[in-house]
Length: 247
Image (spheres, rainbow, N blue to C red):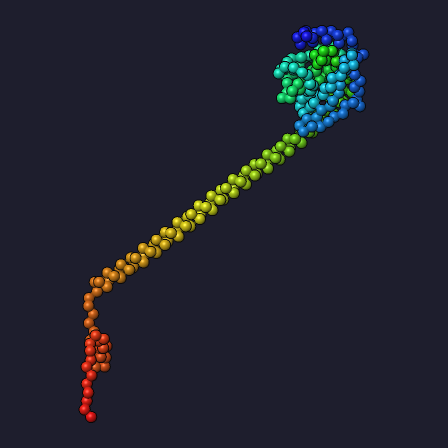
C-alpha cells in the first residue's frame, strides 16, 4: 500500500473527477445536535463512490468546532486537508487516547467554508474518496456552537459547585481538626493546672506542719498554779493509799 501522502494526492484527484454527484445526502433535517458532558456533537456519514460509508461527527465546546473521526493507524499529529467545493483547507489532526480516534480542529476559514459550501470531501479517511452534502450546514453549525456554549457553561457551573463543596468540606475538616487540637490542649492545660494546684496544696500543708512542729519545739515550758478553789487534776500515776478512820 502506498504511503498516506501519495494516497491523499491520488484520492483527491479521484474526488475531483467524481464530483458532488457521489455526495451523501445531508440536509438541514439531519443536523441532530446531541449534548455530551462538556460539548455537543452531530453525527453524519461520508459516502464513497463504491457505496462505502464512513461515520464522522462535528463537535463543539462553544469555543471551537472539530471534526471527530476514527481511522486505524492515525498518527499522533498530522496536518491534513479537507476539500470543500473542491478547494483544500488544511487543519491539524490530533490523536486522542482512544484507539484510532482522532479530532481535527477546524479553523475559522474552514468553518466559514463549511457554512457556505455545498460538498465536503475527504480523501485520506479511507482508501476511497469520501464526500457528504453540506446542505443546512450554516444553521447546523450555529446550533452546534450554541449547544456547546450552553453545555460547557453548565459543566463549568457544576465543576465550580463541586469545587466549592470540596473546599467547604476541606475547610470543615480542618476546622474540626483545629477544634479537636484546641480541646485536647485545653484538657491538658486543665490537667496540668489541677496537678499544680494539688502540688501547691500539699506543699502548703507540709509547710504548715513544719511550722507547727517548730513552734512546739521552741515553746517554753508552761507552769500551772492552783489554789484551793482550783485544785490540780489527779495524777493518774500516783497511788493513793486509803485511810481508815476509827468509828
